Length: 331
Ligand SMILES: NC(=O)c1ccc[n+]([C@@H]2O[C@H](COP(=O)([O-])OP(=O)(O)OC[C@H]3O[C@@H](n4cnc5c(N)ncnc54)[C@H](O)[C@@H]3O)[C@@H](O)[C@H]2O)c1
Image 1 (cartoon, rainbow, N blue to C red):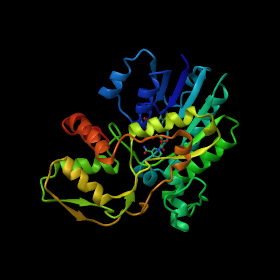
Image 2: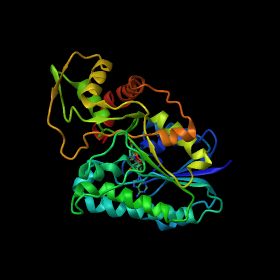
Image 3: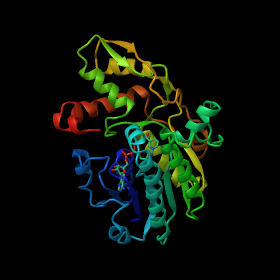
C-alpha cells in the first residue's frame, strides 16, 4: 500500500483528508495539537490499522523528523499558524514560523525516494493585498497579480507567509501543487470561524435578535467533503503538477446576513438580525474562480449550502453545543 504523510493531520482539513485517503493508502499524520484536539472523532479514526499519528512539533523535534519514513508517495503540508488572534497578537510568529514549518516540510520531501507530489495549502488570503490596493475582479482567477500591504501591518503577515511559501514550493525542485482553499466549513472545524460562531450565537440565543458583524460582506463557502474530493481528484491528475489552484465551491457567494438567515432556520429559531459594524480588515468579498481546477477534474459538487450547513449544525449540536467540557475548551 502506498504511503501518504499529512503534516498538520489532526486539524480540520487534515482529519477529513485522512478519512478519505485511508480508503486507499497508509496514512501517517503529524500533529502537535497546538490547534486541534484528540476528540472522539479522531480517536475513532485512529482505530484504523493503516493510520498512524506521530505526535510532535516539527519545529522542535529533529530526532522524530529524522526518523520519518523515506517512502511517502504524497506529502500534504497543512500545518500553519493561522487565525485572527495569532495574526494580531503574534504576527512575527505567524510570519517566521509558517516559513520554518514549510521549510521543514520541504526538507522531508527532499529525503523521499519516490515522492509523486508535495501539496502546499496556501490560502485565499494571498489576494488580500490586491483587493486592498487595486480592487479585485470577481470571481478571482489564480493568475491575478499579487500585491503586499505596508510591511509593518500585522494583518499582512499570514498573507505574506503564504505568498513566500508559494515561491518556496516553486523553487524547491519538488514535484509540487499549490492549493488556495476558500472558506472550507464542516464538522470539527473549531469554533473561531464565522459559521460555527453564528451557529453558537443563534443556538444559544435567548433574545429576539442576533448581532451580526460585517452583514454585507460576501463569501463563497465550500463544504469540507466537496473540498476534499475536489482536491484528491485534482492531485490524481498529472496536469496539476506544478500548478496553483483555487479550491472552493463553484456556487455564487452569499452575504453574511443571508447566511445567518439559513442558520436561524436550521436552528429552528424565530429571531431577527441586528446589523453590526464591519469587522476591521475583513475583506468585503471573496469569490474564487475555480474553473481551472474544474477544467482538469470535471468535479461535480455534491452539497448545497443548506445541506452542508445542516450536516455541520447536526455535528456541532451533538459534539460541541451539548457537551460543556468541549464547548468551553473549543477554539
Ligand atoms: N480551512 C480553510 O478554509 C482554509 C482556508 C485557506 C487556507 N487554509 C490552509 O490550510 C491549512 C489547514 O487548515 P485547517 O483549517 O485544517 O487548519 P488547522 O489549524 O485546523 O490545522 C492545522 C494543524 O496543524 C497543526 N500544527 C500547527 N503547528 C504545528 C507544528 N509545529 N507541528 C505539528 N503540527 C502543527 C495544528 O495543531 C493543527 O492541527 C492551513 O495551512 C491553512 O492556512 C485553510
